[in-house]
Length: 111
Image (cartoon, rainbow, N blue to C red):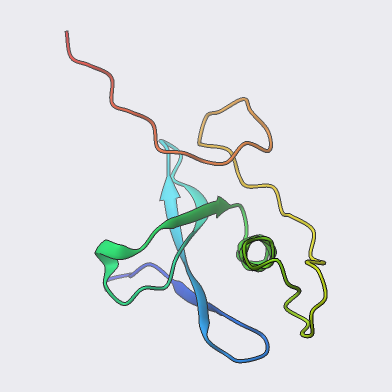
């Protein structure tokens, strides 16, 4: 049996267009679960990283909050200002920093 990574689309709650794609990835030596969100362009080469969260619910809410901040408007409709609280991103595997966004690390130079 082959297992494939799980993937979800985050849709705008009013008009249904895609805001992000969230994928379950396992990172670090302990294969820790992370939910990585990227922009929804059909061409994978054009997608941009949005962030990493510890649960699918955090990723969903985090994407919606960042979308509100970027657009300057609430997803509830009308001309209301952003209302969703920001969701802290999950720090990189093995990182002592809490609340810092996960970022890929550079490979160590070979001696």
